[in-house]
Length: 112
Length: 113
Image (cartoon, rainbow over all chains, first blue to last red; front, top):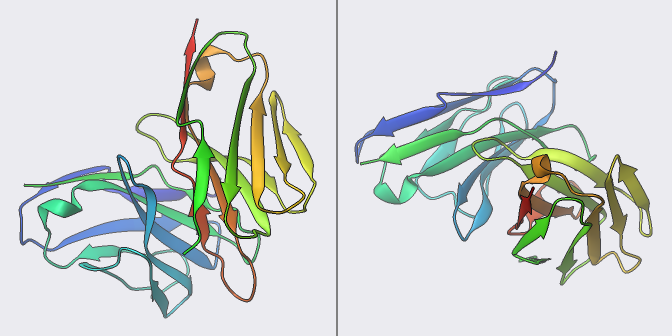
């Protein structure tokens, strides 16, 4: 069955380290998104991509980067992890203009 | 930017009761979506609405796309313990090539058996 997966599911890292979170979908969706979820803030968009080689900044993009070299993957990189980036990260994908996004299971990141 | 006001923030009900929650927006959306999130999991799509006035059901869930295109509601009938979770509304302004969603902050539903 087609799906969207994230890895790792849990990660502990230290301040200043580079961290990459993986997102992989097998639906052949053009659109992929990264969100962070924090208590009191709901889901906030970090970066998104509408196709291969396309990347765009969301509302909370500082300190994060993405790259889209194929349809299936949109890895999220924290260039130099900060304690403020402790959060739960969700990847999502959608096809065309339908609007409906399908979410992965999330990665819980703790930055010490 | 666009904002969604979702209410109530939380609800505590008895098993068997009906539940209603809603979202209002300061701007027009072309698509309304409702998601449910269980603890430790990602949001799961419940219902998608694509036309003003549309009323759609999914089992015990019913959602409507408001006529003004600035609001939507979700009803759950005869609640059961597994309905517990956080419910999110989301709207999409699909004008042009914008496929982003704006999310409400969620309604936390607790069902007392």
